[in-house]
Length: 242
Image 1 (cartoon, rainbow, N blue to C red):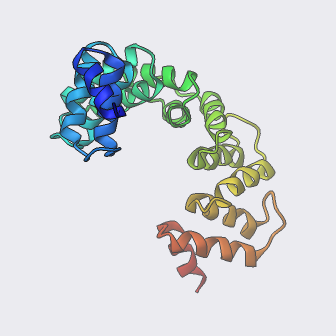
Image 2 (cartoon, rainbow, N blue to C red; image 1 turned 30 degrees about the vertical axis):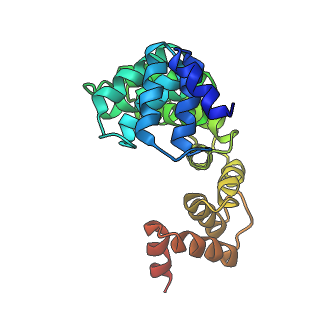
C-alpha cells in the first residue's frame, strides 16, 4: 500500500494527524496532483478535531485567499483557535489582524497582547513588530527602552529591518546611549545582506565619518546599491550630489 492510500484510509477513519498530512500532500502536489481545495477540506477536518497546525493552515489559506476566496472573518476564527493553543505563528498573525482590523474590529491593545505572546516564544517577526509597537506607543505605553530590547532580540536572529531599527536607536540615543560605532555595526549587518535601508544608513555614517572613518567612496558605493533597489531616499541623495 503506497503512502497516499495508507494516509487516505487513516484520514477517512478520522485520524486527525493523517488528515493533516493528507492535506499537506494535496497542497504540495506530493506524489499526487496538487489540489488546494482538497487540501483545505482535509485540513478543515483535522482542524475541527483540534489539530493546531491544521487550524493555522485553514486560517492562513482564508487570509491570503489561496485555494479559497479570501475571508478575513473565517481566517480570524481559525487563527484564534491556533493562537489559543500557543502556536507562535498564529499568535503573530492574530496580532496583525487585530492591528489592521482584519476580520475583527481594530484593537491595538489586543494586537499588542498577541504580538507579545509570539515574541516571548522567540518568533523574530513578532519581536520586530513588538519593538515597533513600543516605539510608537501602539497598544502599550511608549518605551524606547523596550523598543530597543525587542529590536535587539529580532536583530540577533538576523531580521534585517530589526538590525536597521536597532542601529537607528544607537545612532539617535533612543532607549540606549548614543553610540555611532554600534549603529554602524548593526547597519553593516543588514547592508552586508543587501538590505537597502542598511546600505543607506551605513552610507550616511561613512559620508559623515560617524562611528566609522569618513570615506566618501564607500558612502557612494553603498548609496548606489540602495538606489539600485529603488530606495527613494538613496536616489534623492545621489541626485543632490550631482
